[in-house]
Image (cartoon, rainbow, N blue to C red):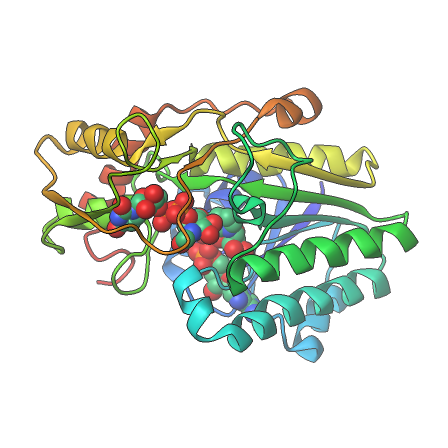
Length: 338
Ligand code: NAD
Ligand code: UD1
């Protein structure tokens, strides 16, 4: 039985991936400092699976404490989710983002080298493509960054590429996620943003549950089918499955590989609102607002490389994603808070 260390395992994508790993009979160790998550997420994953998760509550930037995890366990692979992810906040406090996201990753790589743990999957983002020259987006497209959060992702990708060249024993999967939404169909775990959500679907579900008055749609004059932006929304459980497949690839000794994890389908903001209205069973009040700085008109993945090389294919439809996002929000109007 293989043991997987999951940094940031209590977070949104992390908790769904930990669940998928336990279901696949992996042993799981989670490291998290709960800066953006709750212990309840892990308790609920334990409840859903009937299995125990070994937890270390620590900051990956604290190398001394982090080294304990490697000293005390025989780890086969690491999935590195830990990081700060709010684009707007990263513009206001860039050093916090560089410090947290870069130091944690450098510590992790040093420890993996020291303890001879040679397999890692890293959470990158479609944000590294910036505004693409065309869609769908292929993995070999040029990378452009417009904000500090995105820059931390690109710098870490560059670190991994440099590191891989001189450490051929390492297997590294750079996974570029498109827009994860949805929640586990049980409604027990889901996305739990702090304060007012920045992202579209959590904002809509909070309007639907009555916590927010109306959605502002950022821009209706984009050169798209209905004037609103197009994104590739992927169910978080599909994304979790992508990590299981990425582990298989790592264990086949693949060296450094890079994959988009998306569905290959683009939906507009208005199409997402329509799907959410259907799931909720009532209209979502919204009005058009000016464009949001940094938004691009259209972004969706070519999923072909991940399908061909990993066997990854997203199973859930937009309708499923809307249903599961709503199911989570209505059962947990305050997320993990009582
Ligand atoms: P999240 O905030 O829910 O999860 C991140 C987890 O990491 C949290 O539990 C947080 O407490 C923990 N963490 C942060 N810094 C840490 C540190 N220094 N030490 C220990 N724990 C730390 O975010 P998520 O949506 O689950 O995203 C997971 C990863 O995927 C992140 O790296 C994010 O940048 C990346 N990503 C997310 C999206 C998205 O839309 N959610 C898209 C692309 C990429
Ligand atoms: C955002 C981040 C991106 C990150 C991704 C996943 C920005 C500029 N980009 O992408 O770096 O990788 O989240 O975490 O923040 N929208 C509204 N009203 C809202 C919220 C969103 O109309 O209240 C629109 C946006 O303009 C966009 C779409 O909905 O067109 C999706 O937005 P969002 O969920 O924030 O994701 P991205 O902008 O794709």
